[in-house]
Amino acid sequence: MSTSLILEPPQAPQAMLTAELPEARPVIQLEHIHKTYTMGDVEVHALRGVTCTIGEGEFVAIMGASGSGKSTTMNIIGCLDRPTKGTYILDGEDVSEMSKDERADIRCQKIGFVFQGFNLLSRTSALENVELPMLYLGVDAAQRHQRAMEALAAVGLAGREQNHPNQLSGGQQQRVAVARSLVNHPALILADEPTGNLDSRTSVEVMEIFQRLNREMGITLVLVTHEPDIAEYAKRVIVFKDGKIKSDRSIEKQRNAAEELKNMPIIEDDDEEEDE
Ligand SMILES: Nc1ncnc2c1ncn2[C@@H]1O[C@H](COP(=O)(O)OP(=O)(O)OP(=O)(O)O)[C@@H](O)[C@H]1O
Ligand SMILES: [Mg+2]
Image (cartoon, rainbow, N blue to C red):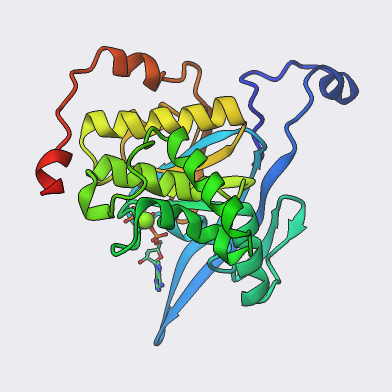
């Protein structure tokens, strides 16, 4: 079920359609994806035939009840896991049959991850956390430093480079994680419940960063959320039910996090106390 970004495709011949409205290059192509987990005698059908295309520059929110298959889908999209059946083409490359090592390489090169629990190394500075993905790719030290500094500045953390995670608020830690997801210039950023542990203003701050990355840098984003409010910052919402896509729609009026932040009270950061 590939849905274009266009709300109502005009009823026109195919040639005219493509001439007038060039489709974004597909970054994610999931075709008839099934995922079955076997636990002893029991088979759990986590995904039951998911087909979906996500184009370059899209910002997609994935929603659905607990157990509907959102994380399973994200794990497959993120090359952390393989489908039991079906084809997955990432950025033009068929990754469904790749080995673990090949998938690890693709993951480093093409995908940035942001998790609900931030997943930062605790004994390591913000700067070193952001440098880490570049270490895996063999980027030299000077480049690593420069790109990490730039990424931290891009998420509003200039000056906090030497802080360890426990010296940063939850929102700041999540911004470090966003900076880390960016540094290898990924084709795609995947975020599973990135605002799940954050208060409402901090959630909007994180969404503001995602919207900026999407709009200004054209980064393709896929985000899982339980919160309908958060999904409205995306441009498209895909809802899962029982391992299938239940609905897939464009958001007509995307919420604007930057505008909303102007009218939200600023809650004092708790950095000062935590700095000791
Ligand atoms: N490693 C696993 N082994 C066995 N079953 C699994 C495994 N991972 C997920 N499942 C099952 O697959 C189904 C889909 O799980 P998934 O984690 O994708 O749901 P979800 O939509 O992310 O839910 P939530 O909103 O709670 O995070 C569930 O029934 C779950 O119990
Ligand atoms: Mg999940």
